[in-house]
Length: 224
Image (cartoon, rainbow, N blue to C red; front, top):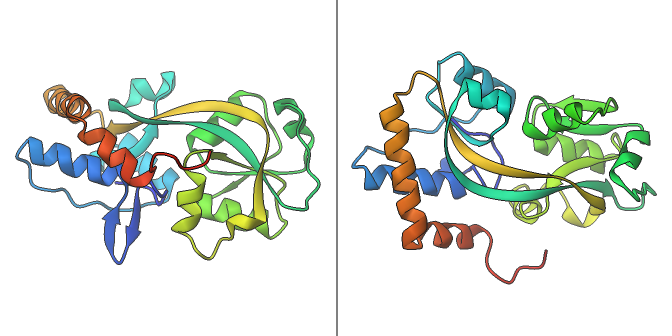
């Protein structure tokens, strides 16, 4: 299972694409496994299916102490700094992270790591939606003041969602927190399977293939 979250995982012309999709395909090829079908769900639904055992793998997922008790992980695959983004011309200013508590509304995807981390940090001015695409639609339409998003992924995310205009949003304030993404497995998946995937992933990193996959979606030299 995957979430529509380019460039990590997304659909294009009916086919699964993205950094995590490419990585999983390479791992399965190394292990002589047949390529798995990938079903896309809103984040909260995919998370519940993995939690209750009706799915095997969900990607990407950030590891937390709570999640480490519920799932098994392979990685770390990729990491990013999370910032708040505002609609250009909105006048929202953030000298520090705490200033974001004073805005009327921060919109986030229900139950994802950005939502959970902001809750744990004490934010109460949160509006929940089904996807990151919905979050930015609300921001651009003036229905929200801020949206959290990874600094590295935002350009590719907007490229894959052409109905959203990146020129209408801008980063504001300091980094909010740091995230690290993994491939997450349901508890029912045998430890031996997870171990084999981790070994294959480590070999991909050592061989340089992981870096080539990363460079495909994040070409060196792109502006930050």
